[in-house]
Amino acid sequence: MAVLAQSDAAEILARLSAMALPAHKTLREPENGLVMVRGRIGGDGAAFNVGEATVSRAAVLLSTGQVGFGYTLGRDHEKARLIALCDAMAQSDDFADAVEQEVIAPLRTAMIAKRSRADAETTATRVDFYTMVRGEG
Image 1 (tube, helix red, strand yellow):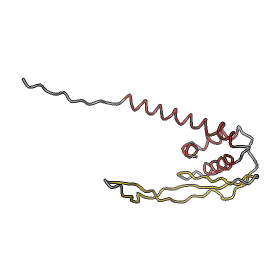
Image 2: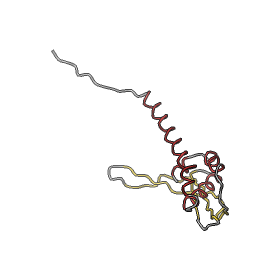
Image 3: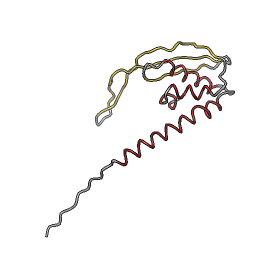
Image 4: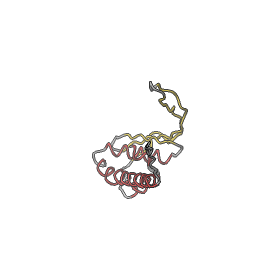
């Protein structure tokens, strides 16, 4: 699900459009809400509230009985609905393999490639500092 949460809604939709989707209905219309973001700081790692973040959530029911839930940061209702649909399909014996192979795996591969490119660009600008020891005498 982390792969879906980090992907764009258009990418997920493009992957799902290539599949035969099962009959489904919306249990919970996509809606916005807030979650508290917590962090840790200091030597003891004490938790503190950083602030709130906006999230969108949705729930979908397949005709075969599986219920899927989708959460994503931001206000993207369509993305939350698509994630919920993928979650429900991943729980179904009939669709689990197809969702993994046709949606999640390609998105994971693209995400890893994007991170690798960003890492390569960052590495190219890396500066190594060193100290020369000055010899006395």
